Image (cartoon, rainbow, N blue to C red):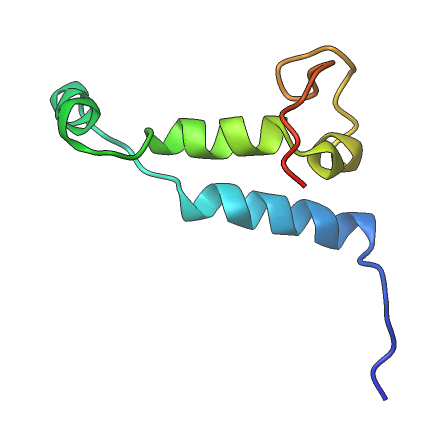
Length: 79
């Protein structure tokens, strides 16, 4: 039988780091501008920062100070 386990702090951090690295890229300014004008998706940095700043488990895992960019007082909660 598989037991339910909770990942330790190290593995939680690795999860979030891997999530950020998934979207890691380096673009030239012209490419960023072209993407803003033609791509329906937000730039990758905002996919990462926007998502994680709204996810309380991220702030808890990295001990982000309250009322900061990555741990705002008010979050958008969907579920």
